[in-house]
Every structure is written in structure tokens, then in C-alpha cells.
Amino acid sequence: MEYTTTRCSNCGFATRYRETGVPKVQLGMPLAVCPRCRHLILDSFKTEFEFMSEKKRKAFLSHTVFASFFASCVFFFLFGIFVVVGAALFSDGTAESVFLILIGVFLSLFSVYKFAKTFLKIKSGVLEQAIYASLKRTSDSGYVDFLNSCYQKNGVNKEFSAFGGKSEFMKKYKVYETSDFCKKSAEEFAGILLFIGIDPADKDRMSRFSHH
Ligand SMILES: [Zn+2]
Image 1 (tube, helix red, strand yellow):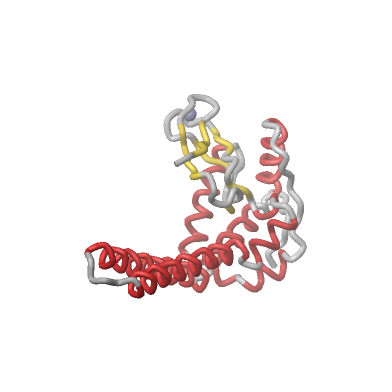
Image 2 (cartoon, protein in one colour; image 1 turned 90 degrees about the horizontal axis):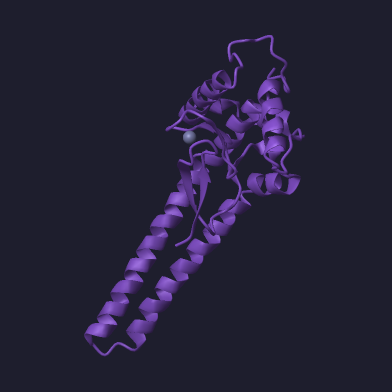
């Protein structure tokens, strides 16, 4: 299996492994601190929502990323059925056909499990929470400026562009303000702000967005 890595540019410590083939764009905070040398790391796999292209945003909002995952689950499920039926049709009571049926049953059960897991994920609003947390981070102009300059310095073709539907989104999902996920994200974010020399408690800081 092939992996790509995010390495600390200072000490070479591999902070993240990502299987090739999984979606290249992950929603999240692209800044992290190297656990080995405490150097700031720019994680190229993660992108803030307002640093994504309009197309990618639409894809995230319409759950197409999840939809493609759904499709693969359905395929897997059908494959399981196919094996079971196929094995049953040609069943002659040999150990091989029993084995085939067992594989089919296992694959089917596994795909049902995956399917249920994805369904629950969508129902619990994991994606919306991630977008919400990201939009909150990029409301901070100090952070956005810092990220813009980070990308420029590292030759990464990413740039802030305000998300037009932000107000509606923030209003619609305001309930996530106090979710465990968003609280944890906010904590991590505050840590990074301090690390890059921004005081998270400084309310006079310019905001890219008003939450009212
Ligand atoms: Zn390091």
C-alpha cells in the first residue's frame, strides 16, 4: 500500500500518513506543531473551508464526498450478494462452495456495517461541524493572514476567499457552537494562535466575519 506523508520541515518527523486514493482534500486546520521539535508544520492534506475552491465547497456541502463513499458501499454490498447467490447456484456441498458463501456473507455484513457507520456520521452532522469549526477559525483575520503568507512562502497555491453562504451557514448550525467537536477544535485553534503569536483572548482583533 502506498502512503504519502506530511513531514516536519525542521526535523523530518513524519506527522501524518495518508493512504493514496482517499480524498486529497481534508477539511481541517492545516497548522500543527511538531511533537518532536515543536516546529510549526504546514499540513498540506488539510484545508480550511474558506481556502477551498468553490467547486470543492459545493462538493462538501452537497455531501458528494460522502455520496461517493455510499456508492462504493452499495457496490460492495452487491458484490457480497453476488458471491452468495453465485456460490449457492453452483453449490455442490463441497468445502469450496461453503467457503465462498462464507466470504459472501462476511462481505455483505461488512458492507452493511460500513454503510450504517457512514449513515450515522451524516446524521450526526460530522461534516457540518467540521465546516462550522473551520468557518469560525477563518473568521480570525490574524490567522487568515498568517495562513495566506504560509502558503505563499511554501509555494502552495491556496488562498483565502470568503464563503458567500457563511452567515446562513453559521446561523443554521449555531447549535454546534457547544458541540464536543467544535469545543475541542476551538481549544486546538487557541493553542495554535498562541504558538504563532496571536492572543486568542484579544477581542479587538480584526474579524473577517461578524457572528451576530
Ligand atoms: Zn520537527
